[in-house]
Length: 362
Image (cartoon, rainbow, N blue to C red; front, side, top):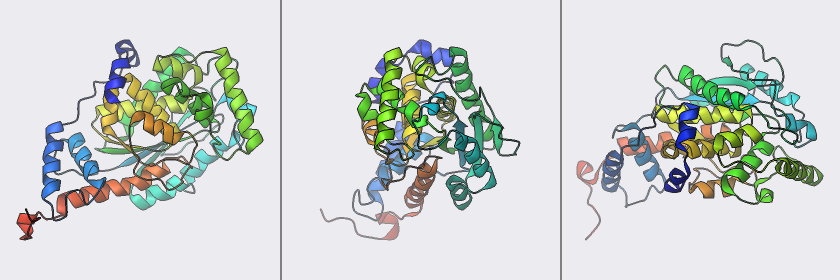
């Protein structure tokens, strides 16, 4: 799938969004990691997917002594004009309220960040309200919510490029202390509606297969959401260019996530991808620069209807499938514990020779 994405990548788009060059991961180190895994005191492949996971992190970091150092979590938050059409079970005021809950320590990602030792940052990408001042809040607001994409493009081309840039800058700002891993999350009432249109544009899957219940819509609400998105497509056929697609149907938090993913890969960071909306941003980033996928660890498969199909389109497997659908980066945060476990096993397990253990009979 990376090769297919590369064939579709637009060099003009890459230049337009101003991304730094993304280096290839070190395949020679991956091969060396696989050789080590084969001689640890266990049957071949007995650690399952933890083995290629450890080898992937070795390849990202270019070393056989991989580590997760100073991990950060960033939640990008913004509102969506289309939310006023009832595409979510919650009012858009919840976005601002949840940002304040993140900062107060009461949200799920706040609890997980404290428990897992994550340096948590919240980015106001376009919340329709005033989030106040807090040492963990980055004010990158483009506008108080996007426009209603049923009637017009969600953002202007200038706003979209600005959002991509601000996402990169936010990542660079909070990772300056030497972090080599980032958990990415989002908050935005109505953003699964935007994500459904973006997925449709990226994959070509039928719109109905891209639309889910989001925060818990009932059947009439789901029908209303589908009809709203069909009306948006009647206004504008999804553009093939990823930045134009974001401009038409995206959200400020999704654009900033896309920029942050590109920046993290350019820094050779392990990128922990959360649920449906963050995966959509990752797919957009991969359309701009296909090499980003080599840096991504997909934390979980969300219960949101379309996420499994999007993961299959990208030809990736999530680490967890436990029915989570909260967003905020929570699934990716939990999955980071699995990454740490994989690296501990890789580094600290003995080899057959070192432990004096007999290998498999010929």
